[in-house]
Image (cartoon, rainbow, N blue to C red; front, side, top):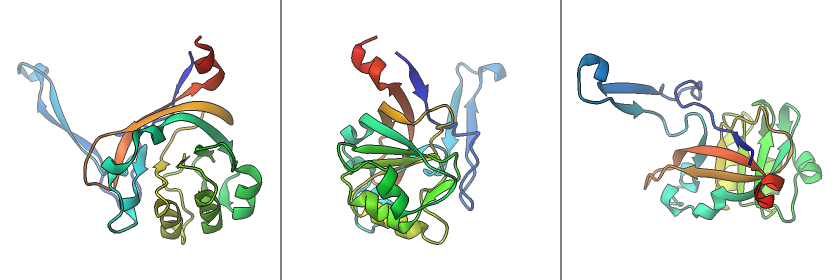
Length: 201
């Protein structure tokens, strides 16, 4: 079975502009003669690979604990886009609208949805969308893009690493950390090549 790690390292990934830096606080160290190693981590919930819940941009909407876990496990489609704005016309031509519940967008971190593309996804039956960019929306319309998806209870995975992933169908496993009452959470995301997964090899 071939498993592809599509997560970014929490400590090595640049933070979104304006967000606090992530760091590890060493509490105990065996090198210092203590009985164990013990660390704590401080991070913005939107650092590296993470998922946005509806609460991120929709007041009173669902927090992380309200998201069904089965959204994050199952068949998905990776679609490659050119760098730059992803329009509604491009989405209509290249993004699926039948039988696809999880869509991952590969744009080498340089493609972002316009509001027209976000509205297309929101109306398409897709239940989870992911991107390898730091944020899914284009500058100037990022909030609109988030609201278009999150208001339809479509979680957004941002900060994926799809460098070594060819477009096509995969099996996604991307469980977020269980943190109640918050608008986002880090997750560890992996892809399994679908034909290998279903063949049992």
